[in-house]
Image 1 (cartoon, rainbow, N blue to C red):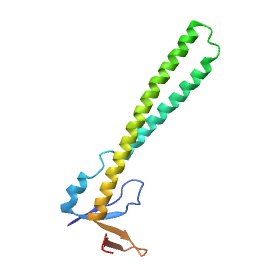
Image 2: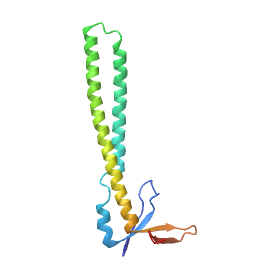
Image 3: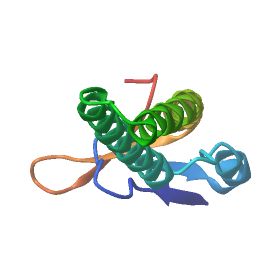
Image 4: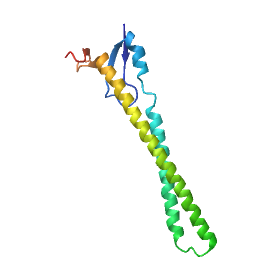
Amino acid sequence: RTVNISPKGEDTSAGAFECSVSKQSQLESLKPEIKKADLNEEKAKLTKLNKELETLKQKIEESKTGQTSQKQRETYNELVREYNQKRERYKQKQTELQNLQEQFNKDVEAYNAFLQNECSSVSENTSGYQIKRILGYT
């Protein structure tokens, strides 16, 4: 018996594969734990935080001029403190996202390598008939 594995989502370049049922549990264990949607969500959060930093930077630049009162200097200093805190958080989140992306890529590569080395590729020819080819034996 075999199990068909077809690409899901928008990226259909991976092709379809057929694996024996005995390899199914190993294949399942190789599926990436990190989801592409989670990566996209983290990227969106990072982009939002970057926009907040840009806004704060602009406020700091605007408040530099005309710092004549104690209150204006305090406001300026508070903006700088807030900017520095957010900047540190941004750098931390950026590193976390890079690590997640690297892990995701490694997991996908391992999953794809298993499919290519242990399973059969299933493709369609121009007349619509399915052709099955065992990778490495063509």
